Length: 338
Image 1 (cartoon, helix red, strand yellow):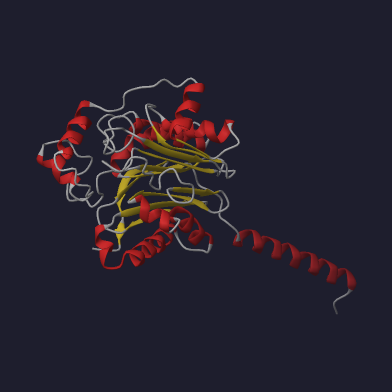
Image 2 (cartoon, one colour):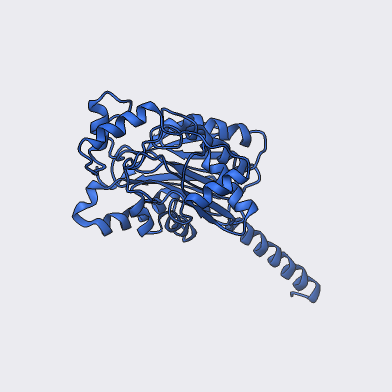
């Protein structure tokens, strides 16, 4: 017969077992650090981020340090210094950053500043705002000690002047023009990435916290004042420390229309793997574009709290760079169109 003492002991044991079951059914312990970035050529950016992460540093500091590498690289024609200009010959920069607390900062259409990601972080940390744009962003940067610099390199200026001969704004033809003139490309044609390879970077640190950054000079020869997805929180980048982080690259207008990176994170919240979550955002872009979907390239990368990661793109040959304690590699994403 079950007496009162045995009943109490059994009840206590059942409660303990139930408690253990609930713990094991929850999120797995993070296995960071790890850093991901859009495009295989951003291994060097990952290396800079890893210098921070491997020493126990914060994901926020890591992604900032990482994306500063292509920002200062004159051979990267789509990010920062050396970026192809707008149709008026002006190099305009967009960037955003987001930490594990949901705090974020962004700059848009910023000129003359080598590292817009640093300005975006100061917007986050030292202003009551999220976004500063154009002259206001420049004024803020100068007030914080940044120096004005000429970001238009002779190579990018030459490419722009060649484009001016026709002034045809067709992003799909621009890489062909550069190739014809023997200008270096950030990837071999016919990678369907239009004319740019924005860097989006997301990281998980040893404490299990997520952060992300995104920076670009945007589409070459764009209309003056054009802003894509890169500096828009929820489009080019989104971080939710309960779930995961995501970033995008490609035709920014299409990412904005589906709130791309936010969509990816929400899909992970619903239980999808990082790759499946990226695929769902891609599906929405393809649906929106109908028969024209094959003329649009967008790629997403994603990382969840478990340290699982994935990517997916509309068209082929989108790549992701990875750095962790176990590996340093790049992978080619699955794509909607083969």
